[in-house]
View 1 (cartoon, helix red, strand yellow):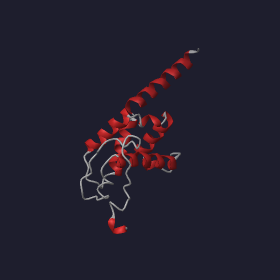
View 2 (tube, rainbow, N blue to C red):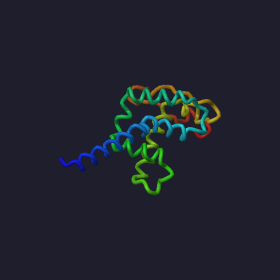
View 3 (tube, rainbow, N blue to C red):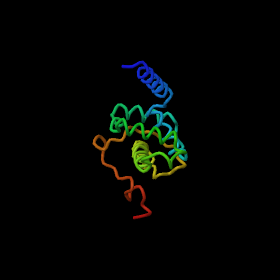
View 4 (cartoon, helix red, strand yellow):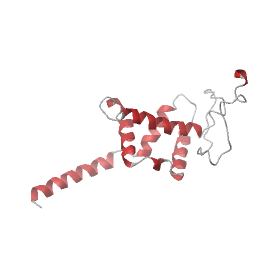
Length: 145
């Protein structure tokens, strides 16, 4: 290996290390995303932290590969460059998936989607471990029956 090549590789690795140190993590991006998506609800930020902790235990965040995590993080923090960044529609899909799973883990639907009531985190939503529930049934909305 030539000296020039060694110096170029060393500089490139140094720059990548600096980027990795200052680049926010995927969990920080998910936290920011959930705060933005639920800003109209009366909710503690501790419930978002608890959801992320439970999602880590349930390995929900591992369903996203490394490339997806990088893409979600980039779009979350560089959203103002939405026209330039690729895969905007996939980002919107993944964002909706994460936010929807979070909202299913709260009591928002059990409270008839009343945004004036405080929303509490009840536990990580797993349909295989919870009893069957239809939040849109006529039991919750008798006026539509």
